[in-house]
Image (cartoon, rainbow, N blue to C red):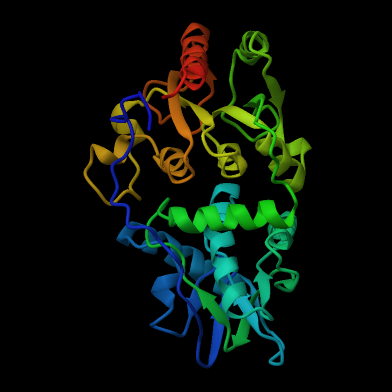
Length: 344
């Protein structure tokens, strides 16, 4: 799939995940973090597996129950739950919650997808693009009690959603939004994080000048609504970005495109992640989420490591980067050359 060695990425067991859906018996408490209470069968299925993760979620759960009011939802309405502790993030929403929502919608078409807070307001559009119109929100600042909710499983492990399911979500969105086109993708898109909360490119002006030599466009996805992002990705043949949720939009590129992820050089033990329940070495490596996503969606994946601006004794997760422009230019040229090679 790629000519780059992938030894810098975590090695995690990948058993493709497809969410189970079912109606829970009795009355259940659902928190804004997506934890389902009062059911041994479903509580473990509402969070990732792993002791460290469950301990962290437990503290969030206790705080939520202690500080938020509990609202009883109408019994004459069937509510479906698709969120988790992580799904306010764009990557988790697209790759985990949308597959869960689709599974609920196919099994219970009249169910209302209940979203937990105002942070999810902009995700309603993505549900409508899946053909889901019945959408509601938790009463402000509350957890909820629901009689016989429709529950969908959270993945057991990060970045393991079934490739077939991801493609199904993508294809439905493209079809219902009339995004599909016979036109070959012709754009090179660089996603800037200048409007994000962190993880910036320090020499971005020079980087954009270099990319302009290839006719690349620099975009801030904050300036696009969801449908506009999908339409842009349908025209994109090469997507370039620092590690971040914007890369999740490769879901809507036509198959056979290329993704280049710009990563920080790791800082040894200071990049250790306790949430990785594997070897110590594995827990210091890069997230493999976009490697896996590219493979699942039949996109060519490349990466480029760059120097972070963090102190020698700190982690690199949110570090700003200084990109080695010559190396990036060579990576782009090689990618374009490979794509332009004649095939037998």
